[in-house]
Image (cartoon, rainbow, N blue to C red; front, side):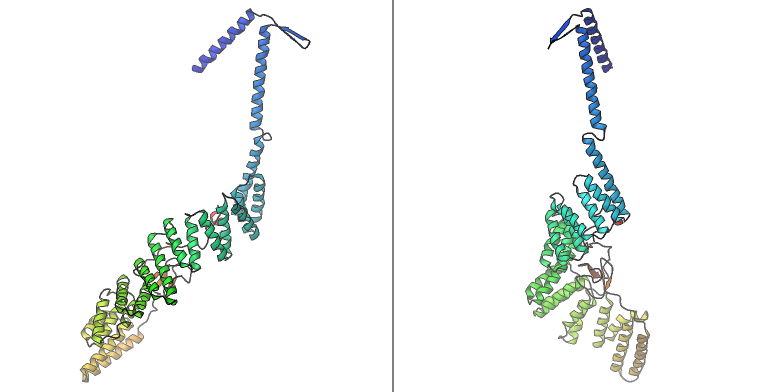
Length: 466
């Protein structure tokens, strides 16, 4: 309504002006350079209006041509970029289909049509890798590395290439650059940590591990586990160098972070015992026994009490085992001490539940030993009867199947079994991933990258950098 009112007012105004000029035509004379034009004011005003209208039409025509015609002005550049983007998209599709040569041809066309941008170099590198042209892969990533805004992408690509070709020294140098450029990148920090560990640079690895934790690259309990293992391997190094106090300091730190760390407990006890501190050795083994009872801890604790009298040794072992009595081998140890002390009733109480279930063979053999010792004490007919019963127990023990004991440890990354604990898994190379079998095995809770994540936009459809 408002616009209609304005249009109506303008029309009335124009009509009034035309009528007034028709009633008052007047005369206009133009004398210029020998030319003389005589006309009325109304005709001159009409010509002027036609001139303005023509100018406006031409101006609109020019704007339309510049905006919509593909060969005029900026449209030429837009059309060129559109063709470049089409070539780039086709290169990605070719990569997904595994057509390396087609992808490389298309991305080269995109590089000619488009202004410089990282994506063309990334896809060109992937196409070159698919074609096995490692020199061109390196060339593309070096171009990215040379730019301020794309340096991190270039370093990442070169890092992946170095890792895939096994050049660990160069990879370590490149990952240092990546961390400098992106100090909070979780994958870069984790890879830096892994390479430092594989190079046995423990102190620097400990520093980077703290940064990995701050960047959210590992859970807190996993970080503590890694720190404990780092302290353990450093303890072994300084111990071999003869620095026992430094080794003990590292072991104490490891056990504080991971109380159930059996290997560290055994090493700490041996170091303390070697230094003459038997009390401390006993305390370390007792704490380890409470945290996770195991036969090696039990055997070492028993070894350190061999200088005591038989009665004192038995009392010492009973007190120790009583802190975690569930281990079967510990129960058999108590039975052995009871037999040696002539306490056959106590030994029978330990062995009877196992014998009632038909084994295991160790329980049968120990019961035979008990019967012979008891028969010797009684003598006469009782000794003969016990000897016959003991022979039956020996026969049962020999015929009793002895299943192969399962590996005590498992890799928490790949699930591979291990008979002994090691800092690095022999199957997958994961560091600080070996745990006792009793621990719950999680699915890749802290698996570190074997290299960089694939620098592609195709997921698993294109060859990764590693």
